[in-house]
Length: 449
Ligand code: C2O
Ligand code: CU
Image (cartoon, rainbow, N blue to C red):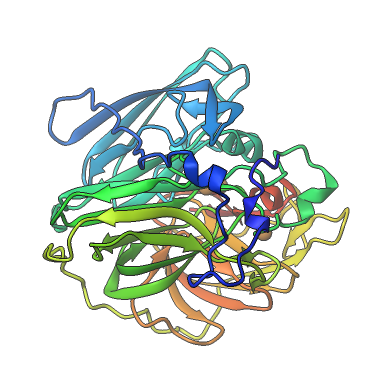
């Protein structure tokens, strides 16, 4: 689908390098930034949060275009689930779709039986229901999405954010989610040959919390914590957002905060920022970024505009651990080599494509050094289920600070080293989060005993 043509009309002379917006588009009122509602906690007991959601058919309005899809409670993003570390979270999922579905808790350390993959769960049939329940272990910004026919179901709008607070983190005046999705990636899981071609980053249509090019008016003087998720199937974001302080990544706070101008979010990635700048309107844009080689040619695209707010808000009194990256133990316990991608071939991990894969067994609680080596011609955001991954080095260079992820982008010809301590027994998937690659077999598994 292609319903947004103005980006092709680049204005060379524009001071900000933004595409020129034709008068007709400018005349149409830009929407206010919507935020998904918080799901209602049905359990009044402290230490427990209980939610109920329906996986439903939905019609999403992207600009003027109606897209027939799915949504949790009919929304994309679905309602936000919130919990505090130590809570037991319960979700009753009612499936009113005409197809089977599951919920995968992306980034959360859940018991294997709750992971929502077909290894452990018969998908919830049309008209069926399932109760997920597990203790919440870590603070951070996680997300939920189906893990059956994943490419298609996520593309159609089944995703939502799970925010886990920690009593150690000061509450912000506004704690919001910003979920980015790309709606015309030309790949809805039909397995077509063009699944191997990354979408053209110059032409995809991004929405933020389901809205096209909204304005976000900050309340004056409020400390704002924003939790970002790239829920797209295959499109990268390279955000340019001056005046934010980066607080954290997939698995919560960094060892130390940082001011960032550029923030690359691969599909499945999250980041946490504190919005510091206020005053005049500020456009937040994404620069073209392609799985076929990072920064790509083209004009930045506006995602939304931040307005109002004041820089007089005191920064959040967040306490960072000051921890650095873990030292490299100098050995490799698990090696993943990425290959493939030529037309009509599978995407391969260690020369294998799912489900014909060799499954190594590792010990519960043992420290594992994981090395990812990308020999293919595209980048891959590699995601390991149910585990936390501390970044040791990227191409031999250690990060500045402790950085704990569950989805790690591996550039072309890049080598990423990670430390992982399996904390739950069972069989866990590890796969590329470009969902067309996942669909194409780029999945491995690990047995934890
Ligand atoms: Cu977010 Cu196996 O996925
Ligand atoms: Cu991939």
